[in-house]
Length: 300
Image (cartoon, rainbow, N blue to C red; front, side, top):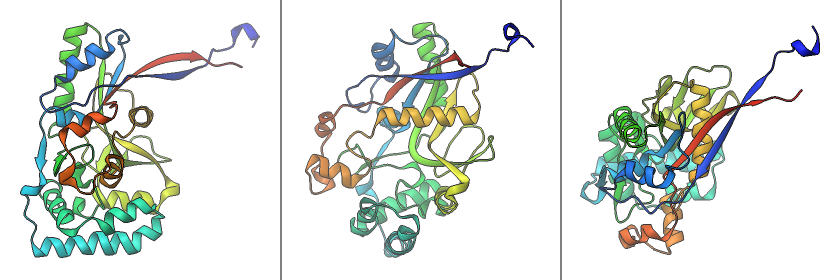
């Protein structure tokens, strides 16, 4: 075969557009914020990647955990799971950092127990055994004792956001909701992955805390990603969606911190009740980034 008849080979290039937003308080118009910030770069085929937590807060899907009254059984079970299972056994096995140990060992048990009790209602025992962010419930980047709840019917919410954005812009875009909680994809399998929180993406199986233990115990067999919670648009295949999720999550950052301990340190506050809504304005937020996909000719 002559050189002129060689088949051209292409690779896919992912490009990310990242711009800061003001904090998305409850009742924020998500679509209006996206259009205002990114209308000049959104084209047919663009993927709008959104933090599921930011969307949840904007929709008012939050809860005051101080209203959850812990009981002696929940406190005992919390101590058993966090302080013994994770703080003394799995902490060493998985070689977690010092900050992880501070959360599972030093956060007062009454706070942890209230969080666990709420998680038990939402996700059952399989999520109760997670060390934190159980069932997708998250306390970071929120004031007082508020937590963001996982979006029920997240796929329908993603579809609504997509349809509203298409109507405003006339562009055929896709919507991807992501969360920092871990998902583990077997390295030799492309069509399935194990998540540690609920997901509406095809091929992802939610195993809660058990998924976390499996993924970390057999680390060499899995690739680790943030979790794609919901996707609406032209199907790209699970491996590519996971790759986009990882790139977007890295671009979004973690606001005031990855954990409640980190958030308190950054704000120089000693307790949750000292954190206010106005504190949320003290840092740039990146609840939405844009990903574009384009083919690129490979060089010989």
